[in-house]
Length: 347
Ligand code: MRU
Image (cartoon, rainbow, N blue to C red; front, side, top):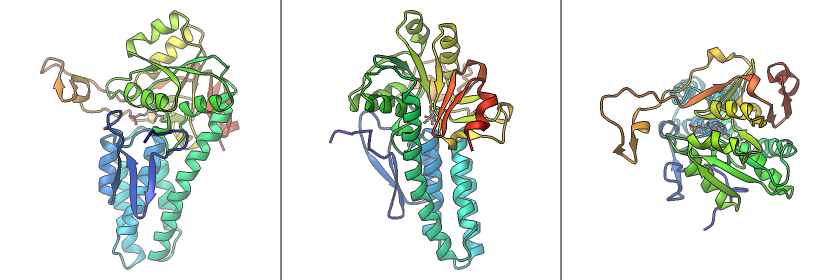
């Protein structure tokens, strides 16, 4: 079967289980896996089986729904304890994408409003179904706003994977590209490989080529050269968290794309749904996830660097607002200076 990422869903609720594409196997194998317990969902989030900020937000919420469905609690208080245990286990998986916490908080708030066990179970399941649908709709709205920034014939550079695979469906940065294409514009995409986990070459290139987009993989070290030689018209990336002071946290490497874009007078647009905005925190209050050293010094299990040398593996970086041309959201475009204009768009 040929995948079509315009319509496909990455994360689904399937009769009491969370069904997700196993992204660790891409591009070699396209496999859905089902997870029946919140502990399995937490493990899947940690291992990048499911990844991308909006996708992990909905997956975590569905993890809590599995706890609700599997619970043998007979009292509301018992159920609450079990849900809180699941929530704290899921919260501990990955610290940077705010969507994870947004998803968990939203479903916990719904549960707490129900007076009896059965009502809470039903309310939680209904909420996660709604969240999944809303995520796809938000991406499509965001895509339509962003498509106005893209001209026919443009070449876009992105970073990581902010596509259907990073959301429930359709994508954020790639959602803009999809929407531009749906308007009849021809868009080419430059895909930095995004070391060390290779979300660019493994996932973005897979998703775009499956949908018939013209895309070129480059090494992360080629980004400056591509811009210098005039091959890039604009940069569109995703976001794991946008803080109230306008800083954009996204996959490691995004900051260097933004700095180089400024140097070459190329517009730099993060694309993020409302669930990626953290209007409570400033940039200095965000934890950047540090991932295992093996991701950097091993490729497919084989060591490629000397033993004993210290390794740093920050999974995300932070782009300051002065490098951001505008942020594309599902509620409209936040123009520069973004730190002053967030509150006029995001409600
Ligand atoms: O570590 P990952 O693969 O979860 O990181 C994903 C990213 O950084 C994406 O660019 C971001 O989540 C935006 S996704 C719509």
